[in-house]
Length: 201
Picture (cartoon, rainbow, N blue to C red):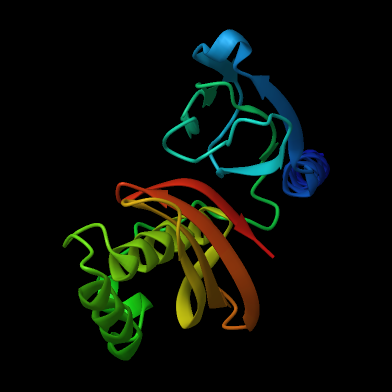
């Protein structure tokens, strides 16, 4: 009798564990109406990804959207659909332990810095700084999405959009936690050293 009860309890616990494991990611719409801060409660223990931007205003992680243990926040006009990760195939991103030189080869930064000198660009706001800002932001975003990290393999373009603003296009290698590497292209808008938009293809 006791053995049967134990077997029944084991079966129930196994079913509950399987159901929890099989729980799918959920999508959450969160909108900053009238450019105001808005908080949308959610279980964010396994992380959050921006699934789709639905506003003309950029949704930039850490600036116009983010999340904490209790939900997702949006601000500055960001309207987005967010993927609430379930833990089925994701783990919380690790804290990055990187140096800028680990992301962008020195020769790339040196070439861009030489162009900055030729153009008389200010230190801290040149092409090399913009490419580095984009690379650091890309690394943060891809870690949030579950990658182990990235490496910049080339810079397609750094186009000045003013004295301290650039459109940056980088070639990336994204390293999955499984060790698999895939190639991608990332674009950033960098204004005064800060990334205001980011996309990856």
